[in-house]
Amino acid sequence: MKKDKHLGIRIDDDLHYKLHYIAKYEGRSANGQILYLIRQCIADFEEKHGKIEKEEKP
Image (cartoon, rainbow, N blue to C red; front, top):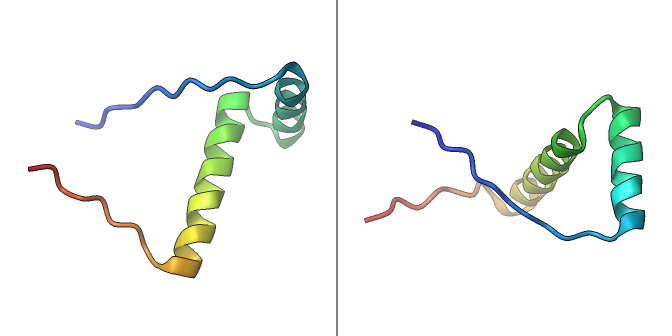
């Protein structure tokens, strides 16, 4: 069963406004925009350094 994780971050008003502005322009929610940016960052990293494999918990 897949569990979603919660991630709380603190950002200033200016950054919050700009995030929502860009998200709206891109047709996404702010949460969707953040997930998009995280996925892009991971894809860029893996392209340069190889796929990140999830370690199994004992």
